[in-house]
Length: 134
Ligand code: IDP
Ligand code: MG
Image 1 (tube, rainbow, N blue to C red):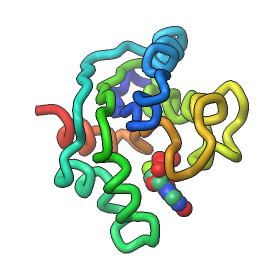
Image 2 (image 1 turned 180 degrees about the vertical axis):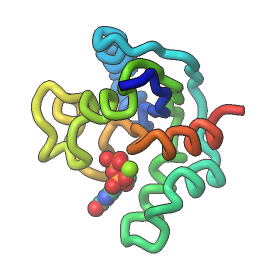
Image 3 (image 1 turned 90 degrees about the horizontal axis):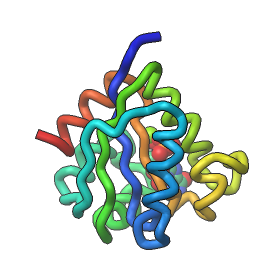
Image 4 (image 1 turned 120 degrees about the horizontal axis):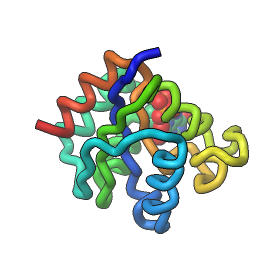
């Protein structure tokens, strides 16, 4: 394993429902480092770039309008194997399937509002960090 960087984002429902502190606590307890962090809105252009792979899918329009609907917390996270570590702390995409003890398993209810985003590979991480941070 090597030290990696990944991009993670607490989605509008995670912020609105007051889970920011708990989520950051889980990352830090796992030994990950918050390198950069910013609260703010996601622009339409950022949302479309981040979710380009889903363009054309039935849920795409809803996903773009949801992720731009309210403030998010944007983070660059680093650590040994950070990409997979963040994905494992997040849990399955559908909160209904996510294991209790994971962020989505504990704080999410439905696929459309699943609390958190995390890059799925080191290549995605580099691309996504470039979308959200200069
Ligand atoms: P991931 O966030 O676990 O990487 P992806 O398959 O990359 O999952 O999907 C990106 C996001 O799109 C999900 O986090 C979720 O918010 C949304 N999404 C994915 N599939 C569906 C669906 O079938 N219905 C509604 N929203 C979906
Ligand atoms: Mg994904």
